[in-house]
Image (cartoon, rainbow, N blue to C red; front, side, top):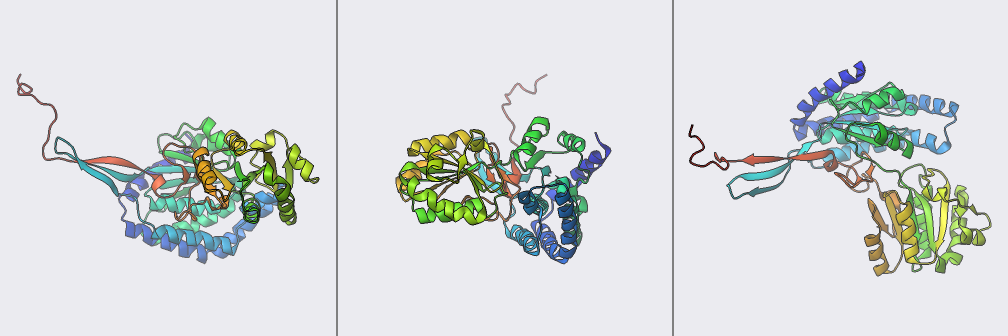
Amino acid sequence: MNNMLETMGRQAKITANILRKTKTAQKNQALLAMEAALIKNQAAIIVANEKDIARAEERGLTPPMIERLTLTPDRIQAMADSIRQIAGLPDPVGYIEEMKTNEDGLRIGKQRVPLGVIGIIYESRPNVTADAAALCFKSGNTVILRGGKEALESNQAILVALREGLKAADLPIEIIQLITDPSRELATAFMQTNEYLDCLIPRGGAGLIQNVLKNATVPVIETGVGNCHLYIDKDADLEMATRILVNAKCDRPSVCNAIENLIVHTEVADAFLPVFAEALQPYAVEIRGDEKTCAILPQAIPVTAEDYDTEFLDMTLAVKVASHYDTAVAHIQKHSTGHSEIIVTDNYQTALDFHADIDAAAVYVNASSRFTDGGCFGLGGEIGISTQKLHARGPMGLNELTSYKYIIFGEGQIRGLTGDTFKR
């Protein structure tokens, strides 16, 4: 094992034992100190971020990727606000979910406990550093972060602020660690540190997630590639549909909860497609459509089969005209990554059917998929959007970063002994 990883792993295990028994008040004290330190260190964080952006531009990163990388005073304030919200949330650690007495008189309960040491691999969004560290910390987990090389300067500057908060609460700074070697070899070794990591969470695009699933020997929680769909039903309010479409596609196209596919019922296609195309024109969205879409919209270019499976993370939208509700559902079921799916309809039964038919982490009726976010769901922040079904699904907040253990109280009970047991 790499010496650096072994050292970090040992420190993480030691501090995990400390943090597991740390009281909620002390954790909240540290979180509020982290919030204050982020604001105090804002200038230094922005200077570091500017270095990252300059290097990204030299390397030819796309504008959406640079947008994900960029920190502003407002975004740093949002990071600080998220940490404050996390401090205000109930601490799941130690919570006893149920307590029952069995036929032997044993009182048996399920108690929430931290996962232990969490590894997180992510790409070019430095706000993940603060969100992930704060959530892991509040839920009693130590964390080893491995961000993308694009955000290395920013991540290190944020780490300084987070560790100031730990110091202020008299807690070890090794509770939050950051890998600064961006090499792929080290990343692969990190995915295989079973001796120290209890769980590994990748957060990023399809390439990163597949690489982790392929190479990791540590248990992995898969977070979401977002090939998200918006279906405009024949009974939709088209003005509402346009608002939702513009927000879901254009607000931040580089994030996983932005839509990539639009499906329009054939009965409203002639009325809706020209309206939505005009609404998207200021954002320079490239429309890739099927035959019916191209017949209605001369500016659309023919869609390919691959387009319907692509997370563009850019101003590109794949469009399909569906002859029936069932056709739209079948298309979503075939191409969805299980992240977030939307229907716009005024038909209550169709809305209920959509909830029943679509198997995704978040299923919306008449609202933008941009709300699939831990902050919007009242979680204070998130590690990522889990698109799997085991252990956690959807935005991963505090509860999703814990497991449970059984706690048993007895009064001397022993099992299954007969009168002859102790005879020799």
